[in-house]
Length: 525
Image (cartoon, rainbow, N blue to C red; front, side, top):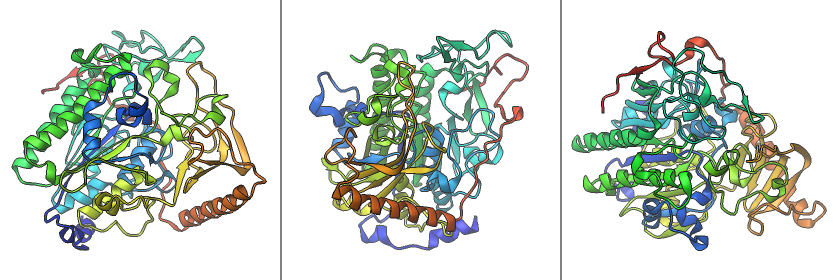
C-alpha cells in the first residue's frame, strides 16, 4: 500500500500542463473475440448492408479510431493480463488460459492498473469477464478492484440451462450428477460448456447465480456499470471501470429484444447487443455531464475464432492468405487476423473528433497511458512493453511502436514464446501455424530458420513473402534478428514471473455442492 501511495506523489504535473486540472475517469471496454472487420466503420467502404455497430461507429467518429491496433496476445487470459499490466506474457508468466480448476492466476507480484489507481482515490470496478484467476488472492477484489460483477472465465467453460449458440452445440446443465460426459461429437471434442458445472456469476467474492443466464447477462452487467458510474459521479470521485464483455465469444446469446435484429444472423444480433451496451455507457456519461471528464477506450482481446463458423467474426482484409491453404489465420495465431483488432478512444473536448490514426499501437499501451493521464509514474523495478500514447491522443501523431512482438498463443510453437515480430511495416515469422478452421482442418506448423517476411504496406493479406535473396529482405532480416535478440536480453534482465497453471478440484467455483451443477440463485438486480 505504501509503495502505491509513493507512486502517487511521483508526479510529472503533465495533466495540469495540458489543461486537465483534475483526475480523469477511465472506462476501458474490452470485447471478446471481435474481429477487425466486425467493427462497422472499419468496413464502411465495403458494406452492402447496415452496420451492426452504429453506436460504436458514432463514438469512433467523434473520437480517434486506430486502424493498426493490436491485442497483446491472440487468446483470452494472456491478452487480459497484458492489458492490465502493460507487460507481455514472457514477463508476467500468463501465457495461456486459466481454467475453472486453476488454483492460481495473474501472479501477485504483477501490478494491475487498478492496484495503482485505487490508492490515488479512484473507485475501481471490474464488470464482465475476468479470466485471470478466481480463487483467493487472485480474485479481482484482491487485484485492486473495489467492485466485481461478472464471470470468472469464458462463458463456454460451464453449462447453462438455456445454452447459447456454439459449434459443437452446448448441452444444458444436467438435472442429475452424471447425465452426460465430455464425449466426442462429429469427430470433434465436445466444448467445455458441456461439462456439468454451472457457469457462475459473481458479485464481489460471492457466487450469486449458478448456472447464470447468458440471455440476461448483458442487461445485468450494463445495469451494474451504469449504477457504478452514477454512484461515483454523485460522490465526485474519479473512477476506473474495466468493462470486459463476453461478446463476441461463444456461446452466443442475447436478450429477446435483439433476436433477429440483424441481417447477419445470430452473430449480428450479438454485435447489436454489444453495441447497445457500449452506447448505454456513453449515454450515461453524457447524461451525468461527466463525458468530458472521462476517457473511453474500446478494443478487443483478440481476433475472431474462425473454428466457430457462422458464430465467428470477420478479420477484414487481414486473412493470412499464405496460411489459409492449411487451417485459418485468426484467433490463437500470430497472423494479423489473430491480433489486429478494433480500437478507438473517445474523450470529448480532449481528443479532436473524426480522426483516423494509423500508428502501430497495442493493448499494452493502455496501462502506461492511463497512469500518465492519472499523473502517476509506472511501478518501478520491471520493464514494460507498452508505451504512453497520450501525445498521440493529443496531437494525432502516428509515431507508435517501432517494434511490436506477437507471442505464440496456441496455434503452434512453445506457447507464450515470441517468434513473430512487427518492425515498422514489415512482419517476420520464425514460425508459422494455422488454427483449426471451420471445416475442422488444422494448419501445418513450420519453423523458419530465416524468417518469413511480409511487407504489410503492400500486402495486408500476408500472401506473398519477400524473396529471401532480395536486397530488401536481407536488410530487414538483420534488423529483425537484432530486435529479437534485444528482447531476449531484456527479458533475461527483467523481474519476470513463472506462471502457475496447477489444477485442483478444490478450485472449482461452486455455491452448493449438494446439487447438480452447484445450483444456487441468490442474484438481486
